[in-house]
Length: 163
Image (cartoon, rainbow, N blue to C red; front, side, top):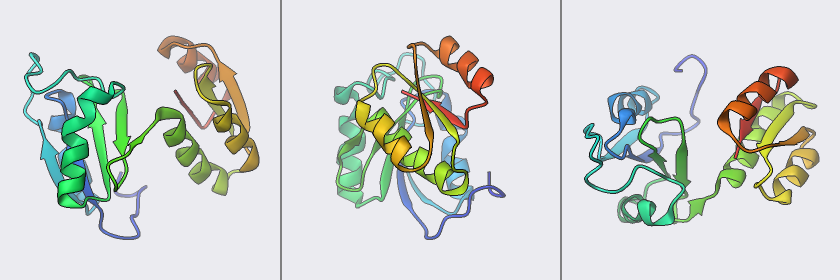
């Protein structure tokens, strides 16, 4: 990761690991990238004593929103229990929705590779498709479900997918 990611400035990052698997890896990874890390619930505990480990539910984002505001962090990342999904909070404590995050990630990719294919689920907003097109990408809307999206990524040789 350190070879691939070069931050332009030191970021203050709040990580809500939700007592899941991210606590074993994410804090160290972000520190190794040069970030100042503020940890929430990094201790693994399958009972999830602090809140359910689902960053797509706004109620579960209250602690990270408060900590981002309190510490004046640049960003907050909240993971689910097995760390295959993340939610994001901006520097003002606003939740960045999945399709908004995918638009931002896609712009980074498309700045380097025009014509790249970007896959997203049908429940994403049409604004995402429009943003991908506006930045030179090929938007591909596909059916909901991890296994379907994973297969479609391989078929299309897409650069990124999300929901």
